Image (tube, rainbow over all chains, first blue to last red; front, side, top):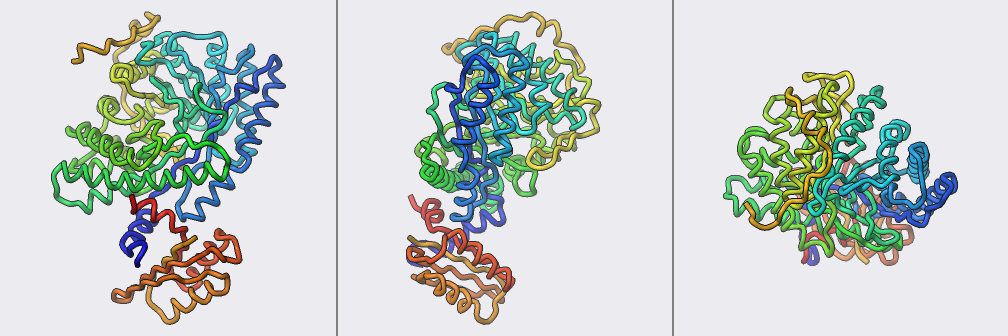
Amino acid sequence: MSIISFEDVFETINMIKEENLDIRTITMGISLYDCAGDDVDTVCERIYDKITDKARDLVKVGCDIEKQYGIPIINKRVSVTPIALLGGRYTKDDYVKIAKTLDRAAKALGINFIGGFSALVQKGFTDNSRNLIAAIPEALASTERVCSSVNVASTKAGINMDAVAIMGDIIKETAYLTRDDQSLGCAKLVVFANAPEDNPFMAGAFHGVGEAETVINVGVSGPGVVSSAIKRAGDCNFSELADVIKKTAFKITRMGQLVATEASKRLGVPFGIVDLSLAPTPAVGDSVAHILEGMGLERCGTHGTTAALAMLNDAVKKGGVMASSHVGGLSGAFIPVSEDAGMIDAVECGALSIEKLEAMTAVCSVGLDMIAVPGDTSAATVCGIIADEISIGVANTKTTAVRIIPAYGKSVGEAVEFGGLLGYAPIMRVSEYSCADFIARGGRIPAPIHSLKN
Amino acid sequence: MNAIITVVGKDGKGIIASVSARCAEVGANIVEISQTVLKDYFAMIMLIDISELNMPFTDFVDDMRRLGESRDLDIRAMHEDIFNSMHKI
């Protein structure tokens, strides 16, 4: 064929049909600053009206683009201004009311998640952020589609250990209140360091402080495509392997850029960023762990895993960056345990532990994501896990996050099963030794120095 | 404005005829066809001009999918931009 070659056409078709290539999400960011007010009912009304007006065509446009280009677009979502930053004075109950309003708006739009029930407390709490955080367990238990996140640290501010301490209790309470759904609420709650303001992926998406009135951000996916490319490359050295990954990432990202540009044009909303993430799903052939194993590891989690992941993450970024005019969000390989068939297998056979996952997060996107731990894990231990992970982000000037599920009533050897994209998580072992006295100190861990690098 | 139709499946009589007949009915002009048969396996790419299509392209996509299902073939119609963006710098 004179314009596009036979091979190129079938390569694209094969990526979509056999290798699970898809656009993971088109996320519309919406500013809610102008919804502020003194009376919470008026504020809720404004929020509902604004979201359902601005995003009214989001799902339809997503579906049309999906059909036009023949590329599946799995999720259409909305992120909003961190709710704790809305002007006005709100009580804990007011915030629950706002969460329910967000949920209602999400249902009206037909989107599966709405992000931004969030607070930014890296340096300290406002009264509003304190009340919002206190409302998180009830908000997540009484809504279906609302996602919440709290940024507790940044490289410039250090770590707000008071916030870390509170989040331990909040996560435990959320697990308890959603115990009938296997503590599902915790799957919609992220604790961040250096949270990105333009992330399109849930549960951590929110519409950042410096963002425009509305914006379109797109998250691509494609672990299956990378995995197959590595398989095809066969026995080659790391330089060649990195090239294979870069080329694949370039193609995947170009598709993301095309969809983002088209969505932005059709919705009349500015294009923000493409997030270059390798986001796995529990489906067979859509696993980041299997990419690492395809590089020559017997099991994800064995020695060499961190090196393999570092190389993968770097090559994905290098390949993707040239393919998009604006890159942002979390951009890198995701390693959520419950959402990745290979990770689940690695945990179940004992190859992958929380400690190894923590090391892996030092070189890739996000952090300890979708890990289930025993229901009787103490709040202090949850805080210790958060503090460790957040420190990696702060010290390395990168985003890290914790999405942990202390599954109520469950212990090691059991599992939680959420189904769908959230998947299945075997309960992982945590250290039996206490860090309670460390967490109880409170205050802030100072920001790290960025010279004298060692 | 162009789109690409791909047809993959077991070879049989009249595959090209049925696809091109449908294209003619809805105002899609065939620009180029490339096809190959490997053993009993049929693969075809058809470049069509859709600027005078008399129905929304998204409906045409469904139409082609249904045509494929009725003949046990995988038929996809996709806007050419996805291939251009992926394979050309």
